[in-house]
Amino acid sequence: MLTYETGGGLARALDPRTKLLAQVGFAVAAFELTTPAGLSALTLVVGGALLAARVGPVETLAEYGPLVPFLLGAPLVAGLTLGAPWFVPADTVGPALASYRSVLLLAVGAAYVKTTPVRESRAAVAWLVPGRVGRGLALGVAFVFRLLPLLQTDLQRARDASRARLGEQRPLHERMRIVALDGLRRATRRADGLAVALRARCLSWNPTPPAMALSGRDYAVLGGTVGLLLVAFV
Image 1 (cartoon, helix red, strand yellow):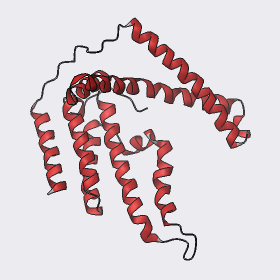
Image 2 (cartoon, rainbow, N blue to C red; image 1 turned 60 degrees about the vertical axis):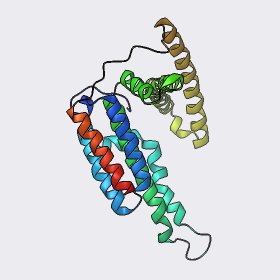
Image 3 (cartoon, rainbow, N blue to C red; image 1 turned 180 degrees about the horizontal axis):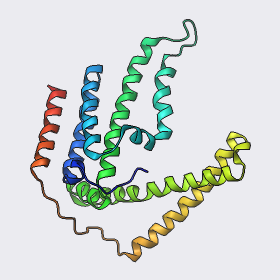
């Protein structure tokens, strides 16, 4: 599940601000380095990030399972034509590179989420975007990180319950309707429970941030991010 996991490794020892800036810098570079050579270089960077986070590539793709068919199918659809020759391989190159770039961005995002506690993510976002806007954005990020894994679990339970009741024998549209309605009911209950929990814990608009300090490893990662941006734009 796409949520924070305790453990060791370089990525978990980094300051959350470093990881956030590195992720933003990688995204900027990914939209500039769109050639096969550029994406190959970015693949090495992603491999290093996953290694530092101690997250496997297969595990990362599994986190985004529903998106994988769209990423794989988009280039094939782009190559289709309404007449002869019916399929143009050259038309699939651009969409294929864009889909692969999306995979790299998702992998970096998964490495960040799995190595950064929600509280630290909230503090890093509030530091990056100062003022009330930043605090509101940080609060929204914390809500998403806390609620999304629960919603994923609820949807999986709804699908398992449907299978246990021989739901696989129903038409596809009927199965989708049942799972969607059950997931919506569970999401509503989750939202109500979250609201009660926030009031019980006296949610603070401007909480005391966790202790954050840059170390030599952080400066090395930030230097590498700057170097990546220089390569992308120069």
